[in-house]
Length: 326
Image (cartoon, rainbow, N blue to C red; front, side):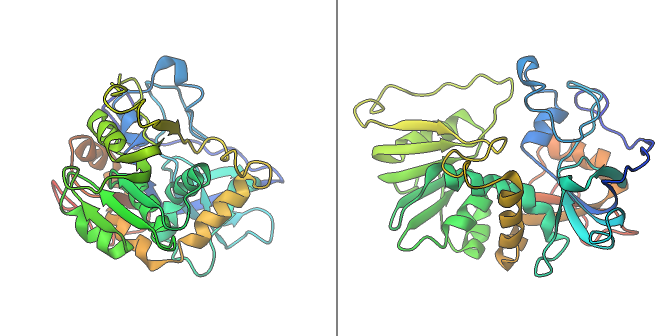
């Protein structure tokens, strides 16, 4: 990205790989509509710029700064066991890159390579469930049916005896919810008395509705990052009488409930294994060629609908993002 709201494809010089590095030729990447678009518009608070720095990010916010952190490619050079393998890496959009071998995760054979770009998003969902600790038979709502919210809902769908509802203002997300195997509701019609609500909409209205959906002593797991925006939290009404709680979940640290026994690599390996589930294909709603990234970022920032947009580094896209939509 150049300045906030602008982006361009530029040439960069690759460093010479060291003995413990890999050279990766990118096959696919994906655009994060949340964090990446927030960076695109220049919404990172100055005090959080270093903390929110993406792995292998070049430059500093507000810009120019390299964009993206969901990349999949084939190892061209490096340790023999990795050469020729498809790997996932938290790396910006780039046709080829050099990183330490420890920074890549091998894509399991059971996972389609193009789907594995969702690994970073599913990893975020895994961490949130580790934070929340949902129980059998829980009543759960996921407010916000974006990439992260849908990933959380997909993982919750297998919770025995649970009532899981995906909540969004966009009625078209009902089809995605059905594919994931969970219920769907508008904010107005969502079922209340929830034990847990995962909030992912990054809106004040979504957070307020999340609190309204809780039962006594229920908990909101706040997964949205608002950047430099101020958000009003309604702590009046029944907040204290209901002994409600709001707790943050962020992927930058392994959830405390698993931190002593799981590493970052363990968490990523689990996320990749989970992507063998064909339901996650519903989260990819458009594919664009690498050269179209600047135009695509502008359209997404302007509100083009859809979920994950995948970037194809091959000679042609698979399923182009339609003008003004997905």
